[in-house]
Length: 145
Figure: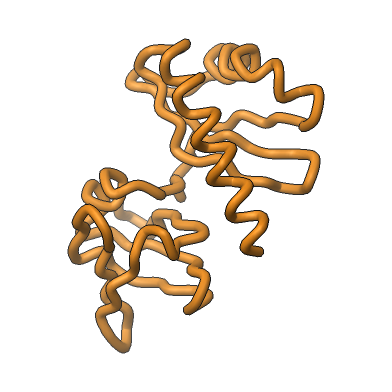
């Protein structure tokens, strides 16, 4: 899992600036490997995500198509969260996190600073360094948004 996580971070560091500079207003939220030969890029845009934007992102990433199948997706209801800014915006919301050490953590984001996020689970409040987070997603609750 660590190798997959490291590769995803490497791809994110490469892809985010490329996409965000080529397509102003577009934010790369996450890059997730779905297999060794395929990855998904989750993007958001100030005017929303449509098929045309996904196609433009794919065109920006044309060089990766030699080695990977590339999928581009909107974030959906359970949007990926990875950065301190994402977690600050999620204070008061429920999240599901997978970490390197604790495996899975589900709860409410109660604080987020530059290095860690604090999540209140049913049993405790947990401070989790961003570097330890392998995956993070919002959990949408029925009737809430």
